[in-house]
Image 1 (cartoon, rainbow, N blue to C red):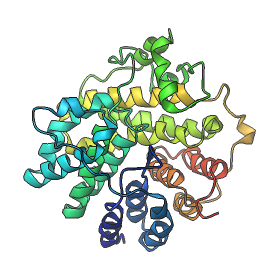
Image 2: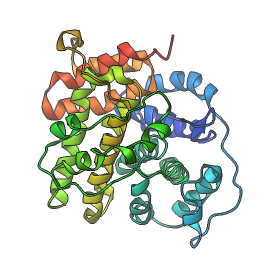
Image 3: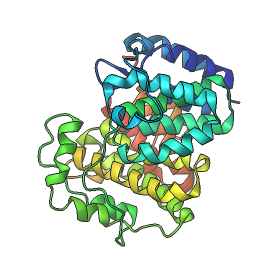
Image 4: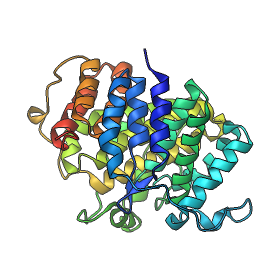
Length: 348
């Protein structure tokens, strides 16, 4: 049984730190501990945090309060991170969290690339926790997640609604890589606007006719990204994790959102997954013979991720178990084994 008190304690420790450290790296602590607690690894959380929090920065201070009329000027300004955290803390104390989300999800969604998609991923984890139980610490976590997303808000070039016939697997396969994969994500995403095939690649996905189709298509995106990870992870094993975890975060947020925004949520999640794929996918997939064999059950694979300790491996395992239970495809579990082999262990 999950020890929900451990999650509140972990949030309490983490909320004394900022959403970023070392200038721009994302604080994955809240996402990793939420996954660990939900999968029954509460006893491991504080030991993991004892090591992790030492790398984090202090909570950033604000510059000037953000008001109801001037928020657009502060959107996407990382220098206003402290102001955004204060803003959402105030909003969530003053009205129901679903009302805040209903207002802000459509505003933030076009900037889904924020923090290399970590803004939406952290928000998805926070919503997932609140849907199970509402308390002060979980509300505070949602405020931190939304504040981080707002401060790092970043649009993706050339985004338009899908209009094609391709399912998620074929749509991912049709994404063209950016020509220069030598620098960080911002440099890579800036190249998308100059790729002739980028617009047609995005349009290739089959659109959703209604909200339920949007949910189904989002599920398909998370499944396809996870199942293709093992063969493509050598392009960048950390960054390509987000092709799976970003649509999963959006999928998990849907129950808290009005059905009217589910279609736009699908489109944004697809654009994010496609952009990260274009930015980091390798030239060729790994041969099937080089891919790992799953060493045990789904539960054993999640235990492998916890023992490995890297936050990206834990988050991928959280998504991969969902995918495996939906598809019964061992490639979902192989993705975690592959990530654990390619990413440096946390406790090394």
